[in-house]
Image (cartoon, rainbow, N blue to C red; front, side):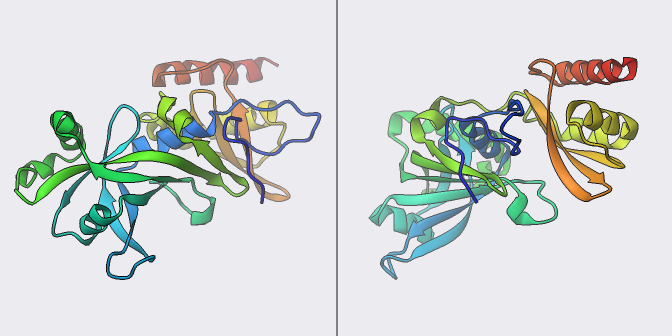
Length: 264
């Protein structure tokens, strides 16, 4: 398995003379995955067993720099661990992964988990409650407080053979894909209602003859499909004709692409 440089587009391997297919950089894909996630696995350094990682299920909020915000109790072991040593990591995995979990996307944030400074607690509280409204019932308990991970490094895995380190500065500057919140609906609609169109798109834009084609993901630059061919299953990346930043724009581009194929 090989890694892709952090600042490069990640996508399916192509022949050396084939044009690369645009895809969001790892930093954007990592921010998108963390944006869509709601719960991660927080690993802290155990006080009881020095040097050993201690894993915890951890809901999180996010600030505008993609830093996870945690609401934790002083009675929790992970809180006691970071009070002794703030170094930790947070693993976030693809929510809708199906089939082989090792083929799904995931991201590991590495950083220091520290108390949110007093002047910033109100904003952290607001951001966290936007994700977890039920937390209002215990957010003001005396033993609960807000902590935040200051990210120092990021490792992104987009599936088999697609992986690489993302510098914290690139992660900090990146933004979630603008289609992130609409992507599931787009994929569901395409897979439910446009079987023939998916096969046509795969033939015309990926150069693959298939019996069946299913859209598996979509972003502002294009989409991935899983194809059933006479030689077995395979995946492909198809670029949009132009960037789509809303669900309406994605629909328009897809309609244009299908119409273009049918006219040929």
